[in-house]
Image 1 (spheres, rainbow, N blue to C red):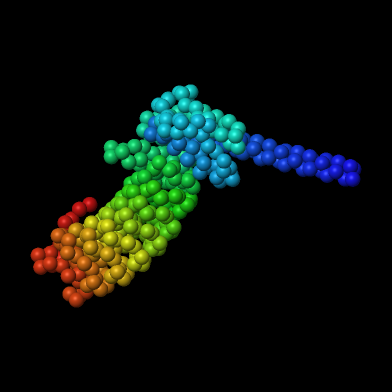
Image 2 (image 1 turned 90 degrees about the vertical axis):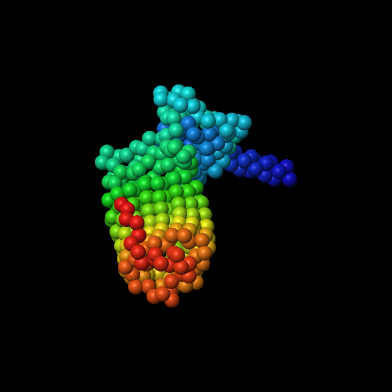
Length: 345
């Protein structure tokens, strides 16, 4: 019996040592991987980042390597902001990884901005640059029109993609469809005049998006499904598809209850002819030129509620939309729907 007990004890001890050894190896691997992340992203933060912001971003990168237990060593410092540092010795954040301390020594920390870093010919963005603009939005820097690859993670602090890919020459941009856009409130002019662009973005989370003005304006080739977008927060869709001449995708799942401005939304989107009769237009005030020169459009919009619309000048300029398919505009507005809408570049 004593021999059996001794054997059991030795077996248990060896098993415990094996577990400790494996755990130790995993911890060391995680720490090494985390140190590599620190090296890769040591210049990726700005003075608008708090320690907690840095933690949240590092956890995104760490999750790719199955590291899940990163936390601040001192939770009382979570709201501390990084300090401006053009040399690289003023900012250190201590993290805990499975109760082991790992220190992140940041390099340059610029005031209110992070620099964009490209490869030699600007076809790939190595580090996304962004800055705080005049309205206190955190806006992504405009990307070179030569770029065809971006990092797969959009930094969490960014909430504006305004003009990000303006005049891009790319047909598609590697990793763009993987971005977590759940914090984005502004995509105005994002792909404006990106004449070749035609990439599937249907899985983007746009639940906080408020303005998409001119997002695909002049994106001549764009014709992708966007019907999965949850657009509850959207307020301004003005010029969104103006001159997106090939666009003809179903948008009937869009929630437009908070949209106030649809002016020129489909102007000169020559191919567009989708049923959007179920859209909620209760709060729309401006429909100027909405279907101006949208020559294929012939859908029934008579069920739209347009009591708040005060401007529909050129609403159906140069298109053959029967009277019985028109929204029930008041007479003053109705008299202007065939007029030429205001011209602008």
